[in-house]
Amino acid sequence: MAKSAEVKLAVFGRAGVGKSALVVRFLTKRFIWEYDPTLESTYRHQANIDDEVVSMEILDTAGQEDMLQREGHMRWGDGFVIVYDITDRGSFEDVAPLKSLLEEVKKPKNVTLVLVGNKADLEHARQVSTEEGERLAAELSCAFYECSACTGEGCVSEPFHELCREVRRRAVQG
Ligand code: GDP
Ligand code: MG
Image (cartoon, rainbow, N blue to C red; front, side):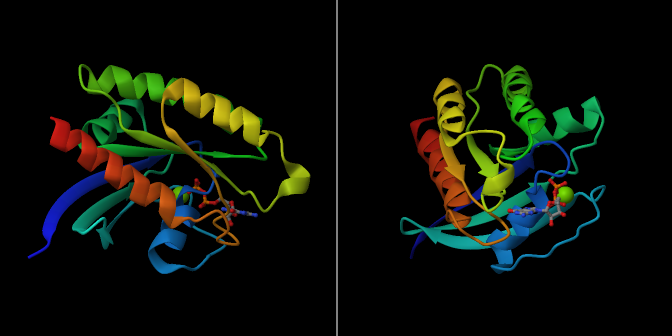
């Protein structure tokens, strides 16, 4: 019988960066234009990753919760997707403080995360270069992806799968 694992993932980032769009694209391969930006949802999803059946619980945060709720989400999660919008420099500047808060909450454990620059289809409106994204990911010691929830380009599944792998690797290491 195949091995199985449960992984809790939470998606963070400024409101409007496309967290809901990315999660729904990953789960349904579809793009839906509008979501209630105040809505927080949890989804369940199963995938076969490296011969392991991984059951994911994915929390799509609203990005406007208060500090107490946010810290609760951080305590809940095993791994984190931090999303920014390549056309919104402010959302990129939110990333490092989010990582710091994660470290604070998860102490003394290491934080497992991936960084995603979304809306890569909006090249004409780009404010954050790919190199800046790569540099920040190197500083945060995490994997980096640029993608578009809209077109599905840049492998929208890959950040979630890689995050699961990383969570599993660290669980095995203890
Ligand atoms: P959230 O607040 O982070 O959950 O953001 P949403 O998923 O609600 O998306 C905010 C807005 O950005 C919506 O109007 C989406 O249609 C749009 N959006 C999300 N992802 C993309 C993308 O990859 N490309 C483009 N062009 N628009 C996007
Ligand atoms: Mg949302």
